[in-house]
Image 1 (cartoon, one colour):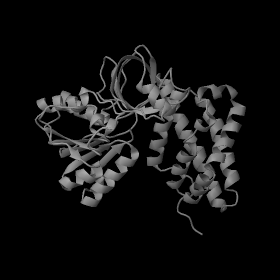
Image 2 (cartoon, helix red, strand yellow):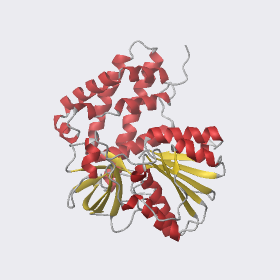
Image 3 (cartoon, helix red, strand yellow):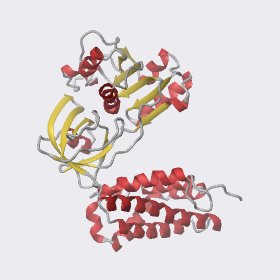
Image 4 (cartoon, helix red, strand yellow):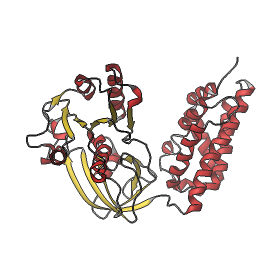
Length: 385
């Protein structure tokens, strides 16, 4: 059978993902036992995304194992991002060797051209990541930046606004997200959070942190004390506004943060003026945690309009809303329903750039509903939150 790419290898890897990762880790840490202290305490969290990344790479790589440019770009970014774990760059060679060996073991009965191509692809994959990390090491780029918590506002039971002052400015573009960890979280566990303000020379960073009852890491990041120290990794994501079309923004809960940063950047840079409509959604009214701030922004920005959307018309007892979730008259009337139900009801939005931010399931539902309503897929952009 002729194969155009290494997808059959990727399928086999996904089937054996857990055992592959466990065996790779076991062999890697036998070679470099001190590196174990750089990674999460729970072994299930060590290199947790490795099978996913390799399977994604293999699916997009031709049988000869030569990585396409798009794949190389993503892997280089991963190499830069993973510097935050502080694994010596030279150890990528060991990780490549043990990964190639374990993959070869689970695909040994596949056609020889697939086995050879997969081995070539993995060697190149780890080489790209190592090279990208080494370039930044040589250039003296910090693997992460440290910051101190200076203020915490509990906006409702599940959402906090955390403001920090970094020791050096944190470079990121409005709309990107940053991996963060703190002295109070479990060692080696990072959470991706989107800054809610543009980057600045003073090193000020603001995060909106959602923490559900069963989310230990989220709760720790949502309830820090002033003076706590955080570590912030390299920025990720490419959600942004460009071109000259009007804009539709859709945020659920703390998905507001990256869109708020983009709005503030537009105001501060003088690049606003295009009609921008923001739908800000939450499970209940008390979780519209920054409605007051949005009202204040709308009052001074004539090109911006905001529509609040809630799934439930009233708050459960545990929400504990604050004054931040209410706004004087002036915003569009609050709508009840899911964002996927409400937003397409206003039209196709085919003439707008569409930015969606929030939990993965919400983003997927909203994007699918918009496409079904006639919004061109190429107009829709989103980041994880």
